[in-house]
Image 1: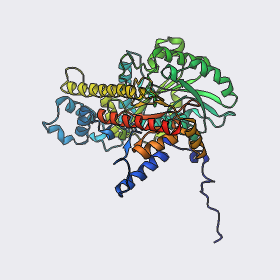
Image 2: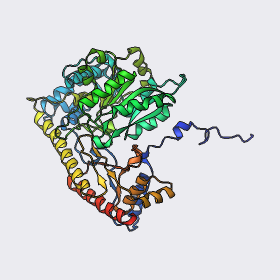
Image 3: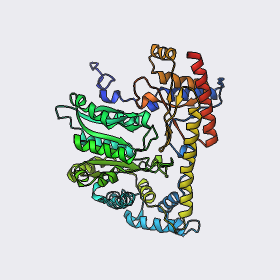
Image 4: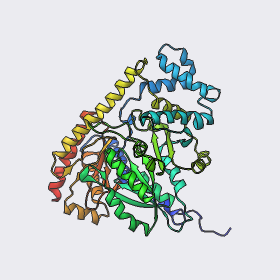
Length: 482
């Protein structure tokens, strides 16, 4: 046989896929794994283990799952336990009700009717309660395999590669990196709008509007992405800021994509989560009947923290059902997890006052929020005492995103090595203290500013110790390179 050139190589493969970076899983994580192996092999390090502060995986960091949620899951997956006296009656009642909606009462079935009909009804009831009576039609709701899959699905609907100009997606910066890579993979164009760090990461609507004429020369801006509460910034948008964004979407004919997965993780005094949909309806029919909105939520964060279950939902507002029903075809390749689906049902309709499980549920929820609030306050206090570090108030989500000063000599050295300055900073921190952070450039940041993201999930005393090590490193770093 005559040797032939290989069909699939780095050069011949889809270059959009090759360009995907997932920077959170980049060189820092690779080096951290190498260092951990070196420690196990007896290589001396000035620390005894790697300290991961880069991910928002609550249960991996010791947070206990919601008791009521797991009880209902246990009873639903093993119905024989319904005869046990170890479970509260309201958990048994909920499990029996769920089992009646499943095919042959089994979580092991595909259960298409449960996923496509029963769950959307439950989700619509939750949205109506959350938004003080704003109507929600279950026919406009699709259960998804988590937020990541929802983002991919929505982009598959809005991106039309047969148009003369590529689809533009207005994306907040800083922003979770998944959006950047997903936009690239879809063939769309990222149109960044920079959040105002000096105003607590508020969205500057005037700047967005001024940037649109230039953006329209290279793409067709269609989607305004809003992430609230913010990741990595930990801010919670005010009602007025949301109103401004909705007004902009109406004026510029933009579809709003609302990522609201951290809506239950709001803990700062005075901070309140307002759903985009609720504010949209408060603005009256001229907005609520015109502006197109797609919003997503999941059980990976919130008070459940079930990252491994990969289930969430998408709600469509003012969008022709014929459009999003196309997703049912795409979803046939990726059926949502049934056990995750029943978790979603339970967490959206938790125990109420008077139920046997209510006190336990409420205590667990309040403990989690109080715990995050205490960690946020401690993080702000400790970091803001350090010359060269500034941390904005942390109102929600699970992270802090402080700005760090990096001396010019360190910036030049990083550039000589082909690194971003905050990459250089975080690599030095890893080598000297064993602490893994996410670099600010992974999320995007204003030119000339540098940040890192730290997850607020370690126990409070451990977190304070980690923050103290960061402050000591920063002082040493500044002295060395100033």
